[in-house]
Length: 128
Image 1: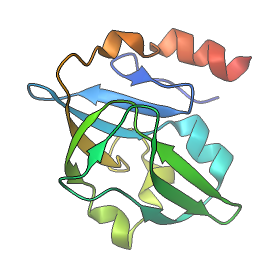
Image 2: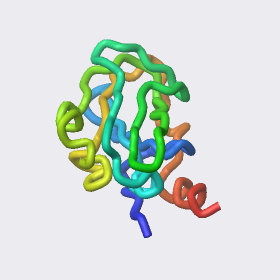
Image 3: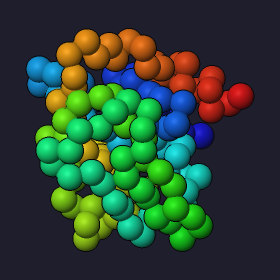
């Protein structure tokens, strides 16, 4: 059964958010989502400088089973993408909370991460 780190916030669409420096957050998909997708073979992410909007699709994960949208959990400007995924998309499956992160966002003013799910609420969402 997947573990959901307590230091992260989650979305109902199975993305996670880790607070970083200042107003920058790191975003990835949960272990549950990675398991559901199967072996990820290609990752399409927003570009550095792109503006993303909370709840909107901003990339895709292609697996041996299907193609799935990546939704931004927050609004803001993309400040970094995980370049390692270009050559090693399987990192998303192997280390979804570590080296398999997707991108970072400088959050827009007024972003409240407390509006996202905590680990317990996310676990309940997955179990329902």
